[in-house]
Length: 436
Image 1 (cartoon, rainbow, N blue to C red):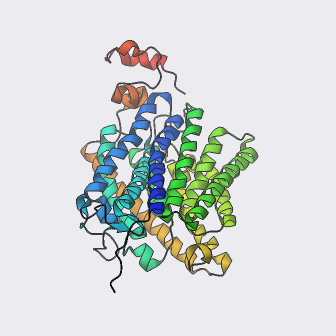
Image 2: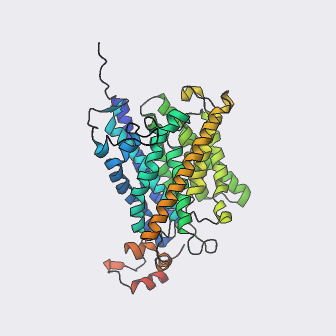
Image 3: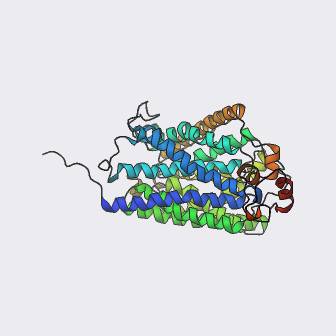
């Protein structure tokens, strides 16, 4: 008797639809988080870099990205084929597990979008917007898509040959964005006034709102990666909440001991650090493991964000200190805290698994970080020598909002009543716009 054709489960489909919307919301949340962290003169530019990433990555993903990432392996575990280019063959009757394949493809698209947007935080205040429009689609195809195939795609070498674990994106999202951000900020160089001028967040309520939206969306990010409304999704959901909480507390504890002041920016950053670290491990560790993972990330990342001043790389909004470092912590600690009841087989060091899984996690971390850094550096250099990657000194000093977008985030009378922008406006704007 022939086997019945696979069909979508309505409960799983409903949950993944909701999770997809939650993950998409993370990019506007990130825009607010980043937007609040920059100075008033570049708020809109920061928001735009996130929002335009939604459009750019979506077009690339639909054209070829999904097929290359999740199509049948075409090159020894390195990249998929083009059988689904243009989303061909993904009709309403096509099923991935127990959900429609077109929904699975859309869910994965939201991951690619937020990863590109994350990178923008490393180059805030000084990157050409036109260059960003070129960088994002090229980077998505050459960096994000191959790593996504390695980790999650059929035949991907990290998943099926190495055996490293990554439930929801520690490697293709967190480590890729952090390593790519480091490469970009090295090519661009530091902002004017780096280590001399105060570059404090201009709007901490906006930062807190953005962090809250990120946390909310992260439940879709992590629990949605179970691809079903089931116990694994519930466990990943709780682990995500727990790690975000201990990340927040860990960061505040360090701030209090080191600086004597627990800050709102620290609370938001600590929660994000905990969420970053639990992303790869939420489907592999117990609740106790999740609490430790979040605490470790919050404490370590609170120190890591200051490394840029010692090593002289200007990672504007701490993509390296939070996402790269947090992603490494969460991915490696799978090799310590993984439990068979969650993984279905692999166990970490503390649960009798020995050093084997930890070694696999380490190999995956190093290879992905080196690949993402190297290819991103090459893309950035090519763009820099052809069209220029950095805004002009005048644009950077005046602010990218007014000079690039002809807008200001806050109305101080500069462009009141729809007055047109002219060269005479610029010096006046510099006088009346507060530089936080």
